[in-house]
View (cartoon, rainbow, N blue to C red):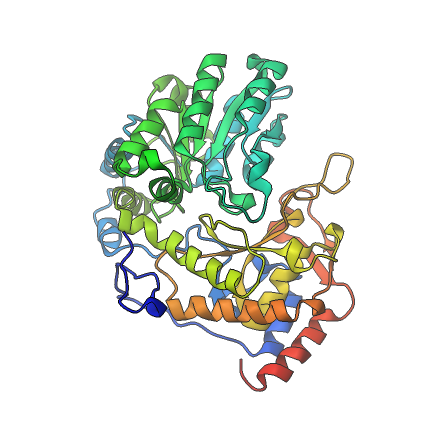
Length: 482
């Protein structure tokens, strides 16, 4: 429950933790930020972290761990097989999800690779509410195709829809019938949907999806990487969940989904990945790929100290004060920007605050990559590193044409328990300045374009000299200030 302040103008998210360790940050002068951005090929992934003031690239693997997680790392059992550390991980999975059958992998995309190897093949179709970059890449690498069945209401940037990640259930049922159950690799629910603003999926919708899968005889898969955010939204936005215990929701989902997997870089705030199921049939079908790609079945390529932190973090994911901090900070930032008139995705989802770059620079065409351009501009004028979640994050069609994103978003992730409120307000202030000077933002074009996952390591250049003009305006308004 939110803590109310006596004076309404003082109402802010109240942290239910204290900071016991700090890491020094560096804010470069604006000319050096321009140089760093251009040397990085206008790709925020290629910036050196020493050149970044606030790293809002992702909330994956960069969250602050708790004191109990660090303490747990000290008792790790460093054995190749039969390690007690894995026994403790299994106990945590049992407590949180109620599953006995557990496969470890070194991170979430490794779990996606295992699923793809086991179930994707030419002629197979993976159905999803919305794809994630690596999920789609693994499925298509194995010859399958990916189809998205999110309800069209989820693609409206601003609405009062509390669950914009929901499946269109009628379309799901019809597509299974059209494809044939035997040709469906799996039906995957991503909770919440990363590429459309971290938008959650309702419990009602998830259970309806699994009911359809059971009726049609196809596998149901839950990507639970962002599930703790999603459960927070269930608790605060869905009447059915208001009085349910967190563990009750986790267990109910595990009762209905055939397979659950997650990145522990998100769920548990540690690192690593897990695939689990209540039915040993599914883990038996996948376990052969663990030693082949990851490591032995009791460590799966994860360092045992990290596994101990994961186990403790899973227990902490049953604490509402633990899972609420991220969504509350994201909500605060999104509402600050909305009050300034900046176009953001509303209602706010998990992961981070998402700038609607398509509305930020509406005259910039898709093929000049507006979301990436807004991200470059923001870093130059603030030292804040976000992530492009638009057309650059897509992959070209087989014939080489661009697949334009449904939404052009610049994501400002909010790692959990990392930033202070003054830093969040700094972000809002600099985004507001950029919004007021948005006419200076120009486009980008490729100089090096990889065939797969180009957003990770591709390079681009500015079209014209708009970045230099942006710096000149920044100096005019801020003088010698960083």
